[in-house]
Length: 196
Image (cartoon, rainbow, N blue to C red; front, side):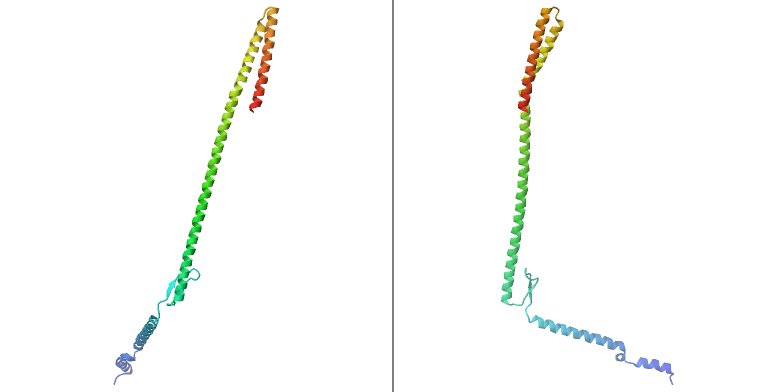
């Protein structure tokens, strides 16, 4: 007779594989996989009977689905035309804005060039006017310088005169030289006011 533990061991060895729990788990997984495969295959065959949807971009909608209906195809064509004309209008508007900006910058550059040219012309005119004024005043200044030299010479004659006749003659020449100096200074002041 076998002991109880030995009987358990022999009973365990006699159990068939289909009585093990892992066998049924594997079987369920296989059957479930086959069932899912069959369902997927059937649904794909069913969906292949219908036409494939045509997904196209529209300006009014993100996606439109076309199942062979000619009216939706026409609307897609209209949407494509609208989108094309809209993008053309946008491109034309951006080109127009760029052209306007370029024209504005060109006009600003021309204005700056004209202002620079005007300033250069004004500076040149001022320089010429100053040069003309100097040339105009030069004879008057020369006359004043000459009159001052005559006064100095007459004063020296007065100082060096030894007798009364020479003194009176020298004094008369000095007075005349002073008069000429005053006249030359007055003429110079008048000329300076004229060119100022």
